[in-house]
Image (cartoon, rainbow, N blue to C red; front, side, top):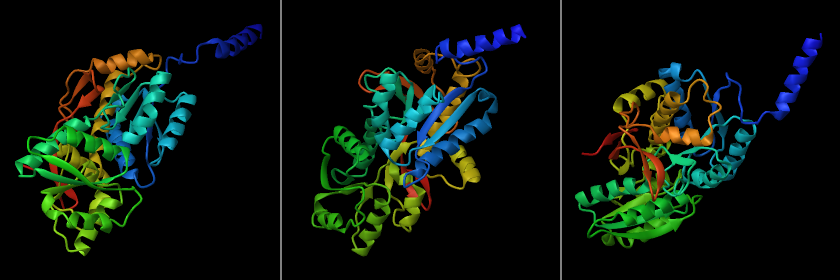
Amino acid sequence: MIYKICLFALAFFLQFTLPPNIASADAPFNIGVVVPLTGPTADYGIAIQNSINLAVKDRPELFADIKFNYEDAQGNPSNAVSAFNKLLAANQMKISLTWGVAFCKALAPIAEGRKVPLVGLCLDPTAASNRRYVLRFKNTTDEIMATQAKYLLKNGVKKIGLIQSEHPYFEELTEALQRNLLEGQTLTIIDQVPTTQLDLRPSILKIKNKLSDYDSVGVFLWIGQVANFYRQLKELSINLPTFGSDLFESISEIKAANGLMDGIPFSGIEIRPEFIKRYKAIYHSESQLAFGAPAYEFAITVGELFGKNSANLSAEEIVNKFSLVSPRPGVAAGPYKYINDSKVGQYFQFPIVIKKIKGDAFEIAQ
């Protein structure tokens, strides 16, 4: 009896005296995933969640001691901050994974201050710049837009117009395109509109009045606006050469445009055809696999890096393990490699290609 009382007293004492970051030997390695799973940007979060689930299904032996904990932040950076803090308070986050420029901008300074490794599926190079605990599993906007500029010039496009939603993502894309223009190319922002503005005819009429001033117009518009833009172009009987952003990988936008986006080019990471085929067979879509494919590679990478007895690794040890990852061929996307750049920080680089919309799928432009 005295022995049992002593054991109870010892356990009671230890729960208040052991450091909070010391986990039991069989504790899982928790990864907090802060993404939109409902709302207008749900396509992105669902592609990320499905791709992680597919990685776990493909390589179950890697994930016996790893747990993914999801929080739905919808499309709101404030929700993302709340979700991040919730996962951290519940001790469900040795690494955080998030999506998008706005989420990365909101969470990066918090993660750096709290010394919680944050992996962003976002193009914004400033998220990881001069930060030790933030890295990205996505290319830089400059790499994406350099490929776009080269393709445009190759096809005789020098005078570039742009219609842009007022959103941090499109602001960053526009600045990157401007930085990567080639000799003879110019860029003019024709109009900027709020992300909530669905009547785009005033902007289209501005373009119509200066059609001869542009060889092609970039459509850097938000979800719900893209399909409207092409439908309203048709309503106004305007033929206009255009190109898009990687938001054009939204199948819901393509379907809503009723075929009017066919043939539109945009730059994005290359995704393996075998992965697309298998993903479509299971989930009946290939929407936003530009984010799903890197999420798959992230999952496989953490599965190989953080197995049994990893729950007590420090933030410094976790980040260091990422830095030691050698170039990989990739399954969903790749080959890819780790880069630590003095200007943009730590990120994993994937091949970039030009894609064209074909029906409700995509093809690589030659």
